[in-house]
Image 1: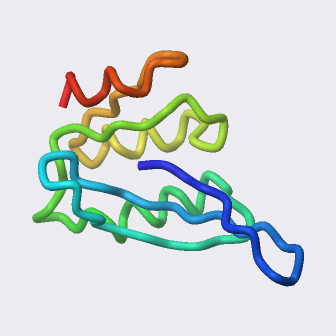
Image 2: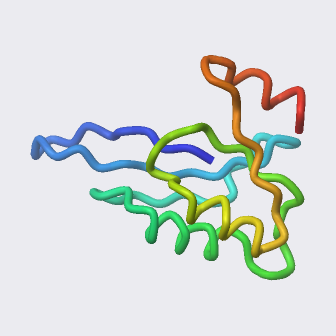
Length: 96
């Protein structure tokens, strides 16, 4: 899961949140928000992973947007959060 900025014509900077399955590179969930707050990320995770479709691992970077609440929520859902190393995003592909 990650965020990327989407420049808009009105000089606003909305953020796109997306979740991708690593095994098939399929987008599982996609949402756009103007303010990427932790509570919104948690809500998006609940929407992305219904009870019967929760993954075993979730890869996320060390962005401050996630805080402590996002990894805690993932653990409560039964998903182990895997943080990538600094400057080494490719190492996640080897773990998952």
